[in-house]
Length: 299
Image 1: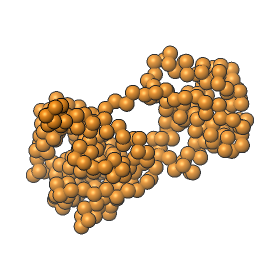
Image 2: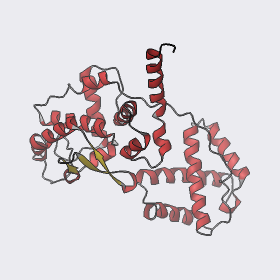
Image 3: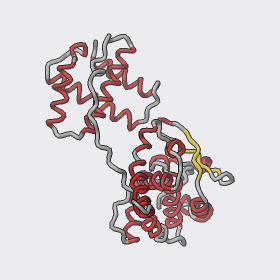
Image 4: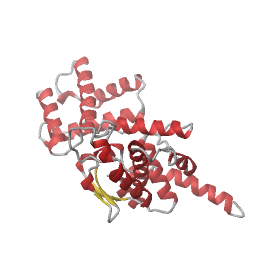
């Protein structure tokens, strides 16, 4: 069996059949290449020769490099998927990664913003300028919908339904979902599109349906959104590190704290598995404990 040929076939399988995103494929390639380099160093020239003992040596090397349990777990998942593909294609009879348990990971409680911090951010943009209107719309929309920054920058004018107050979001793996947004986000988005976006677009010679544009009139990037948020934090004089995903965490945490059910939040966030959403229940449990301690006569 030609190792490089099977590697390429697996990547094509991810692209065509699994419809995986470019970022996901990049991670699989990175993990698979690291494993193939290990096999080459160990003098193992056939994928048939990979057994439990070989995998344990590989894991030992990973831990010796002081990789986090999350990184090790991801590599194991990638390789398990690769061998599952080989098994499906009839290239091997047994997946040696099946009996390798994934390392247990500590799930850190996601950081989120308190309402007082958000209020300060909502009042820093200069709404008399096109960029100020844009920045306000970005902040309102990220908090109102919990969308990923990659989904935000890909948002098109045609994907906004102001009459229903919903967005058609292009998520991971090209999966689409409808997400509602509230009156504050609608007002900010409408003001930006009506009174700010055209002025930015006029600075470019290229027409685009992307909602959010940079100062040159071209589509804003993930990095551009992060820069916008950094500037807003500085203007608000907050001592926090604000990245787009923290607004996603904040959206989920606030929704659950106010009584939203887990399944609904899962659908709004576009999580494939409920376990991805359950991490936010740690925060809400703390919230409920504080309410209990402050309210119950015999707490």
